[in-house]
Length: 36
Image 1: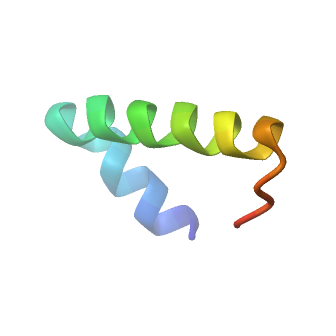
Image 2: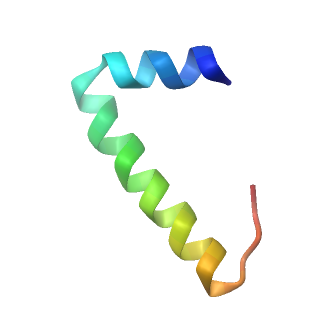
């Protein structure tokens, strides 16, 4: 998964999307939804 993450980081548009996804994942984890 490192390659995929590196690709996302390279793209500016994807960066914003990745950040949103990361925030959602963190919220889900905190809510009690352990879905990785």
